[in-house]
Image 1 (cartoon, rainbow, N blue to C red):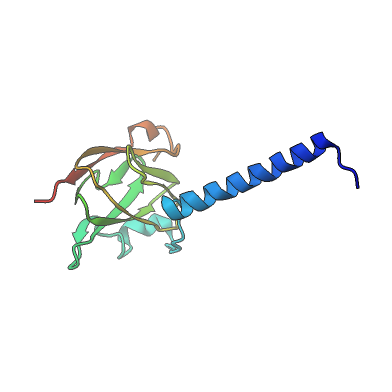
Image 2: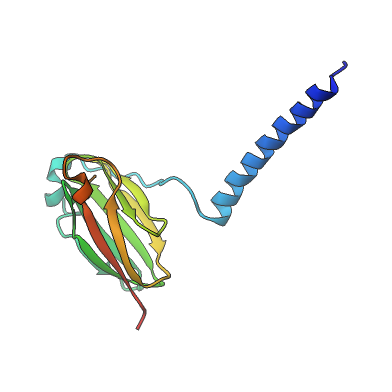
Length: 159
Ligand code: CUA
């Protein structure tokens, strides 16, 4: 079969692009830990989130092994609690749920960014290396007060 030289050229270019894309997926997955959340945990009635035993008490808990758990509830138009303090250099696990509509939990300047969908528990673990103050924003339009839905994360240097 005779394939024209231009045809052959573009076939190789096409194949090369596919290889580059696959390589990027591999590098970001293995090297940078970029992957979709795989945690599946539900809340039968989102409107009862605040009385759910998993979310009735919000705030920061330190476990015996030194890791930190943060429990937060999103509701129009605030985060509960709106200010949290966590240590630098320790794994921090966030557990979030929404009482009403879909919100977006983003900590500006970090890789923390997850949707908070009513009826589901959003969970992610990260480590903050740089002490300082970080802005928590809502990045999913959730109503007329969406732009006011902010919070503060304080990463404290290890003593
Ligand atoms: Cu909550 Cu936008």
